[in-house]
Length: 345
Image 1: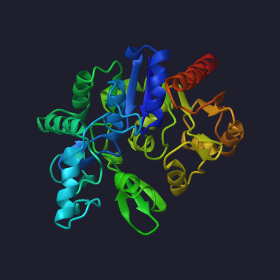
Image 2 (image 1 turned 30 degrees about the vertical axis):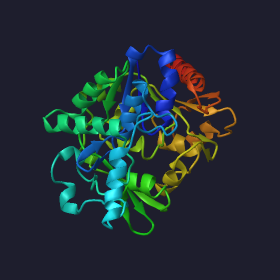
Image 3 (image 1 turned 90 degrees about the vertical axis):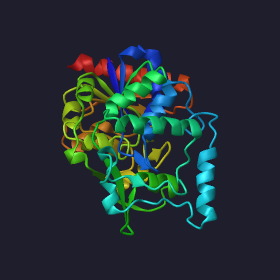
């Protein structure tokens, strides 16, 4: 059995190879829910859905978002209506009182559907309507995700990190506080990050299913350490569980060069060096790291600097993932790292 922590596109890409190496029935995926939003009354779970759609064979792999060949008639009409009456299509974050009204799972992340700043496909929207309606019928997010996983014939076990609300909020140098989706989707990562807050995390709990999954060896793929993995680590009990089980982390950097996304800016904003060295510091519980063959980071020296013993095992490979064969190569490096960690215990 092996558990993957998933957020963004890094870990979902790795899963394409992991399910060649491990029996999918023995793979559990714990997905980040910190960047979920309620948009126009519907709960959208981007990181959950990327794994859901990929495992179901319908993911749009050009964007790593939504369903391939989906239509966007409803989205386009929402934007046309907003423009027609002068409301515009910028994000419309609901006011403070509205943020904690209604369903608890959506607290602190509610946006109006006017203008719909995130592009939601028509089939994709059906998933959000179904999810939200099942939540309103009284089911937990874990139960709802399992129902949707059955609908998409997933072979792996997919779990949200918590049934409680956690909102990833970006604090900017300009003194703004904006939701991660506004920061990344609407503003394309333009504001300079001053800090990142995981609102609600201190009061959230991992589910029993997540606790059980973290008893197994864990792989953290090349996901954003701040906004993909950070919300999970902020939930009490998860970091402690990782300290008690073998953990292998794949760096999303080659030295100080990030493969994609806003990881470098976000790491700098929260005080980590935007590099593989910063990844090592961010994951003090990791027993091993998988690095690119061109990465010259001295992991042992980084660990010495932060006073951690023993030095983690390091496995090298080409960590770029463009297709399933690449993903299998990186997954095999993760497997070797887990074996090395197991042989040392």
